Length: 115
Figure 1: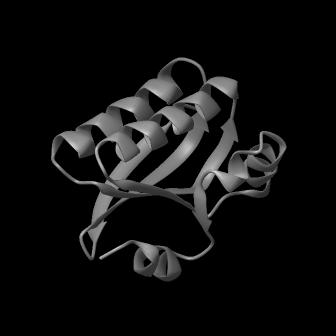
Figure 2: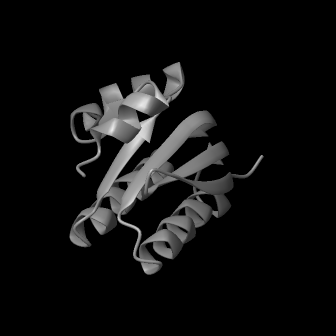
């Protein structure tokens, strides 16, 4: 199953609801293109809802880091929401849990962005 992405706006923040697998090939390309598209529109506050992401491989992890870097370079913020246990454990193992700002509920995540 490939990655599906849908975007919505909440209080000036772009929430990207992702579902499927972020893996080498199509999954990571979808994520990269989606982030580029959002940044291209000048939207700099991005919340990735990973609640329905079932699997991330090393390429997917690389893509998350690239997205984080790209958003930072534009002066924006990228946060993660609703990690599944698998994805949470993966971020812990790779020590990336301390790099990303991870939230468990959308309201807290939305209010955590700098105004």
